[in-house]
Image (cartoon, helix red, strand yellow):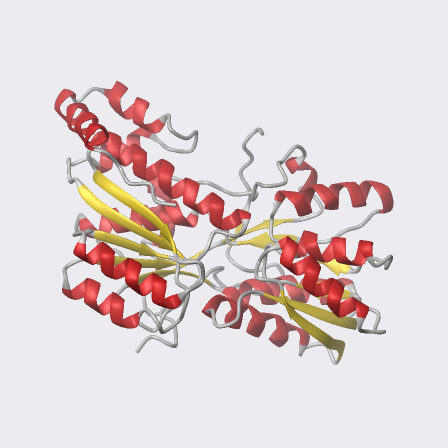
Length: 390
């Protein structure tokens, strides 16, 4: 599909004016050697060849970073059961492989914790024993990894946490998503569209994650602004359309309440729509999380009956951003300890820019090293510091 770059908002769908945001694939010695040869030859063709692994990777970024550092990198993802996590793993792998081609990275490993805290702790400890310089973590828990992160720091490793944080550890860098502001703004937009009156079903993410707790806070605080908006049910969709459809279908079978709005936490919108369709009910207002399956359904529904909504999420390129940040930290660049990653917003006006998107794709803005340095590394560390940090 033709690549489309989204407009980025720094949370403010409703003029809120706030900043938005705040399996193994190890390398081989052969790839490391090719990276060393690229450094020795110094030819631009070597950087172009390395950048050709993905159309968003910029050869000049690789050249700017390349000091033949040979860093060893480990990435533990909390799960990869939805398209966003699968896509963020691809971004990480593509960039790591390109960095490996030119010697910035000597080796890397990607593992998945399957939402088990003990497993993720063990994975981090394995990275420490393997001598990883950089450990990137999409966390299963807000506090359960603190001991392992402390161990990593004591061993000299840099830890960058992103996406499903924040975590309470003071021993890592954090690239968080401002879930309260993001989901609050999406919810408020929908409440306004409904005239401030209606019944709400909330489709939550995964219990115990900071992301879920903060997204839920944003949703409920927004709803509380409208006395005639009533929460009539909650389910856990686990950021996955199949799970969301199953859980919402079960809820619908046991209620007589008419649902006017479904507020999800990303990855669940298409499943929500299918649950109402399967039950033979009118599909309520549902905001999306930029998944292709929902965007394609939305386009068809708009053509058929004028269905209108909004969609937004902090998109999966943040894994590449975390990697860029980690390399800069290791190289001694001045990087704030706490940062927010922005949300991409899709409105009715630009929906059809995404015609042809694959159902399995997340509509995503991709950036480069200069964007990371100008938009993330310049943020106010204290303003982005999570309240839970010890």
